[in-house]
Amino acid sequence: MYAILQQSGHQYRVSPGDRLVVDRLAAEVGSVVALEPVVLVASDDGTQVGTPVVDGVRVAAVVVSHRRGAKIRVFKFKPKKHYRRTHGHRSSLTELRVEAVLAAGEPLPKPKAAEKKKAAPAAEAPAAEKPVRSRSRAKAPAAEAPATEAAEAPEAWGTGEAPEATTDAATEAAADTVAEAPAPKKRAPRTRAKKDAPDPDDTAADSGDSES
Image (cartoon, rainbow, N blue to C red; front, side, top):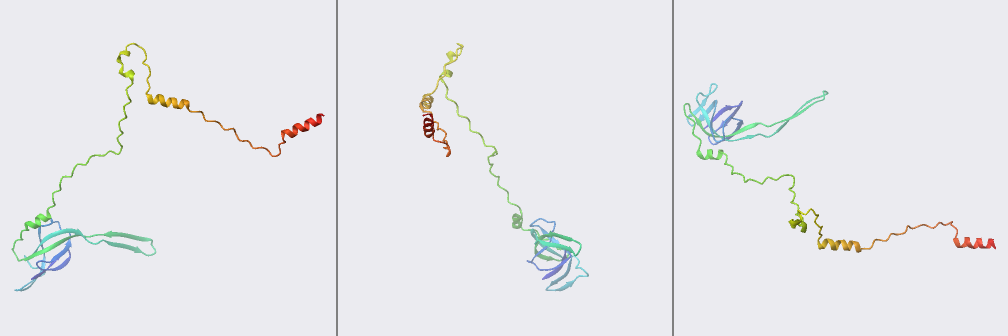
């Protein structure tokens, strides 16, 4: 048994159990839709041809999924006019599964419970809360300075006298080491002897001969 139906300007030859892809239908996944008009019905009893359609005959189909077709490129060109246009297109489609060819007055079959469960989206598990991280790094708390003996002696606060400054043993040792270190020696600037400069001994000898 088969039927020829019209849908969105196309004709399809369908039988129970076939799958076909048509233009997007406003129906939920898992629901049952009726496709009409039907222009021809062929069965064991004979063939019924519509004039132009068969009255009351419908095709029951289940919506399997909604998807989109392949992308095509459309290019327009006009010579000698500097006209170039390119754009793409993707059709919105619906995939159907044919259940039965219904006679006049026959009701639509009810969708199966298993198909409804598949169509219903799974409940999303609550996502675990993630700690919020700020972009600025938190600064580590500054190390507390060691308390001095003056801070630990409250009896000297009311006297008006300034507490004596105390230093650690490590600080005193470092100060002694710096004091004992010898100062670096400065290098005398290197001078370049002139080639034409006269020798001072020869000059002195010449002066003595002239005096005598």
